Structures are given as structure tokens and as C-alpha cells.
Image 1: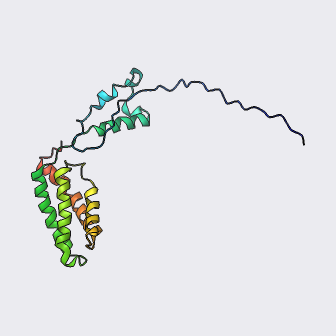
Image 2: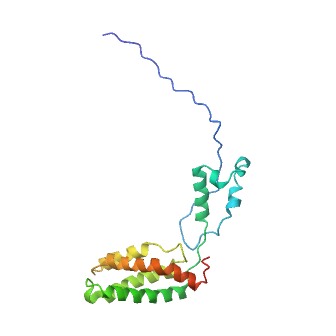
Image 3: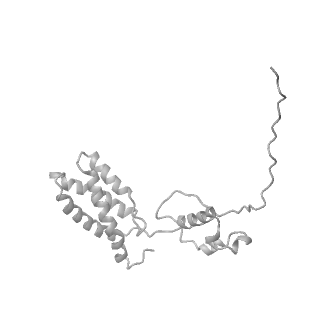
Length: 186
């Protein structure tokens, strides 16, 4: 058996990249609390924090990752309005009336329709009083909670009740908020 001498491996020489310019963006990390966010940022001010070579570029000409960081920063600093208890109370009455009317038409609830409506109304009321602060803050969580709570308490049709509830909310809550606040959601 003839052996050939082993060749040694030498990695390629790495040279510094001359086209990459590192920049640092102001970032902050925090847990999301809908009503404790900072005011809207000024994107021009944020843009001007780039090094001078970047100042001349428009936002749309920046590399995708930089644009994403700027947009993420802007979104994380938006402050939604606080919930309005009077709005929540008025909206809950409309919600309850609609839900009772719609679920009463379905045979799956039988005698338990009022209990199912009560469960959904309580969950939605808690959400409107504590978290909803205008357009952009209608979350899916309360509707998932409705389906789970109805099913967990042994009533039929949790997902159907949640579907009716979310459909009504999508069609009415943001629109009603705008009417209630005179169109100003901030």
C-alpha cells in the first residue's frame, strides 16, 4: 500500500470588508403594555441619528434591515389612548344585545344561550375596560378566551359564539370608537 503525503489545509485569508459601515440604532426593549408606551416618534429625527453618510439617503433607499429597525422602533413607541369606561359600557350593551339575538337563532345552545352570552359578555367587557384603546387595539385574545371559557364550562358551541362575537366586533368596535371620540383615535 502506497501512502501519499497528507496535505495541510490552510484557510483562505480573510480581509476586512470595505463596503460595510456599521451603524448603531437606538433600540429599546420592553414588555408590551398597551397603555404605557411612549408617544409617536419623529421618523425624521430618528433618521437623522444615522451617521452623516446615511443622512442623505431617504428611508426607502436604506437596506431592508435598517428600515425594519426604524419601523419597529416607531411602532414600539406609539401610544394608544387609554380605555374609556363609558364607551366600554355602551359597547357592551350593543354587543350583548347582538349576541343574544344571533345565538338564540342557533339550536345548539338550547336553554343555555343566556349563560353563553353572559360568559362572552363578561370577557369582552373586561377587555374593553382594560385594554381597548381605539383602532389598532382590537385583539383576538378575548375571542379565543370566549371559546375556551364556553367549552370549559361544558356549554356547546364555544367556537361558534366566539366567531359571532369577533365578527360583530370587527364590524362595529373601531367604527363606534371613532364616532364616540369624534374621529380622533389618539
